[in-house]
Picture 1: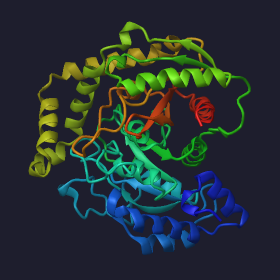
Picture 2: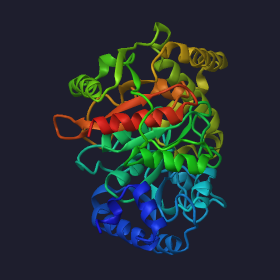
Picture 3: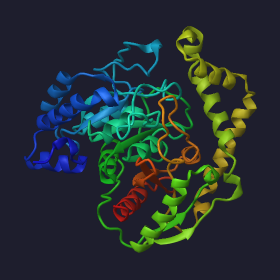
Picture 4: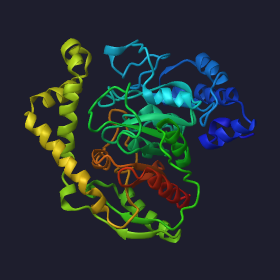
Length: 422
């Protein structure tokens, strides 16, 4: 048998269901991989191999039976500490699992460990490296989840996205990232950053893995993306309002992907958003920082010294803004959401960059979310799939964006794109 740690989630689930693979053997393979590579990657905030092995042996039957999953350390877990990468919460032990963790376990998933996040999924990166080049960032804030999936530590991992924290690290690490429609996955038990922007995100190595997991924990019917589409998809090529900040490798990638999709039978059309959708980076910043400032009321009042200087500055900036600015930002995005389906036009999805370019060198920054924040604020489903490599040999991703609630279609087209680019 090939190394079980390198199986896709759907294939591992099939083998477990058919009796060809035991959950304990899959967990053992993942732990062996972690033992060999964690000293370089630093994906984990907390790992208890004995507990993970015991839980694999007792895994519940279900669509995720025996599948190990990583959990970004902003999700509450009842049996592992939840620290949010903050000294304020060092050793914090929640009483209950976050809803998304609980439903994943109910479907048979096995919690392997807690993965590194930036401070409160916002600032101050942790020690995680990109598994393709340890001198480069894996992206963030879902750093450990993206790196762990890419390096075969687990087939599935939770992220979150308030700007670009699922899609960007998935692209940097060469895996699939899925940000569902806003509210599809329940956020109870996830540390709130910005209430109107926070999403639960999923990472895996194949699109079908995300559909399997997302459907199991949300109750949505996301279909089987591996099933052929009834007709060739209509794809709008949207360079997005941030195109001027695309690196040369992303511009070249976009042209190459268009050529390959045409050869695969896709019907392509240029599609740029109306002018109202441009210049919204400042609106997003205002909304994020003002909502975060209110969400962190206790930390600001009781433990401000435990917040990094850069985070304190962002929160104090948010508190200093007039209340009308928050209302205006919310209303602006509300109007853009209302008009988005019409703006997309007669195509099934939009195709747009997932990140400006390759993962940057250095661990002090997690990269730029400029190609992500608009889609996050619009609440629409997004999937990034591996699409090639840049000049330094690092992964590049391409992002598929759809209308709100059309997650099944977005996942199906994402699989079409992934297959065309193999």
